[in-house]
Amino acid sequence: MRTNEKIRAREIRVIDENGEQLGIMAPFDALKIARERSLDLVEISPNAAPPVCRIQDYGKYLYEKDKSDRAARKKQKVIVIKEVKFSVTVDEHDYQTKKNQAVRFLGEGDKVKASLRFRGRQMAHRDLGYKIVNRLIMDIGAAGIVEFMPRMEGTTLHAIIAPSKKAEPAPVKKTAADTSADESSATEA
Image 1 (cartoon, rainbow, N blue to C red):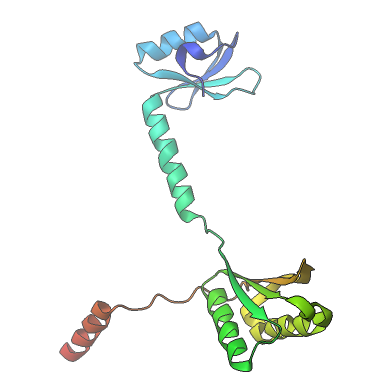
Image 2 (image 1 turned 90 degrees about the vertical axis):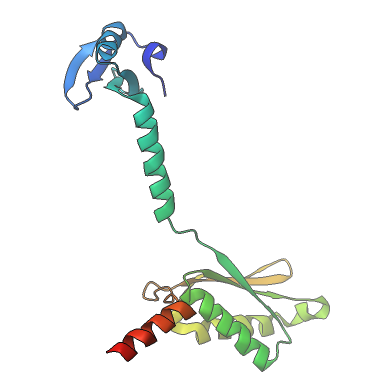
C-alpha cells in the first residue's frame, strides 16, 4: 500500500478524513492538504481510474485493519478431518466403538474420514471392505452426510462424512466449579 510521496499517479481522486470527496487533483496538492491537517495520504484503490487516495492517519488505519483481520480470523471455523480406521476383519465390538467415535466427531462439528486398508490377499475381497464402510454410513444416519462416497486409492478405501446441518456442536461440559455453584444456589432457595 503506497502512502505520501510513494504515490506515482499523475492525478488522483482524493477523499478527506470525513469521507467527503475533494475531487481529482495532482498528488502533490493532495499531499499538501494532508500535511496541513497533519495526516497521511493513503492510496486505497490503486487500480481505479484515477487511483483513489484518502487523507487519514496511516498508523490508525493499519491498527484498525489488523484489528478487523483478527476479528475475522476469530470468527472463522477451522474444518478438522478426524480419521477412523477399519480393517476387513474388524470385530463387532471394535466396529461399534469406532462408529461411536465417528458419531462423536460429527457431533463436535468435525468431518470424519473412514478409511479401510487392504493387506495382501484381502485385495481379492474388496466387496467386504465396501460392506463395512457402507454399513458405517447407514449406521451414522442423520448425524452426518456423505461428502465423498467410498472409493479406492491404492490399497485403501476412503469415504468422507461431513456433519449434517441440523447437528449442532455438542454442549460445553460443566466443570466441577460450575456444578458446585449450581448445587449451592439450589440449597439456598
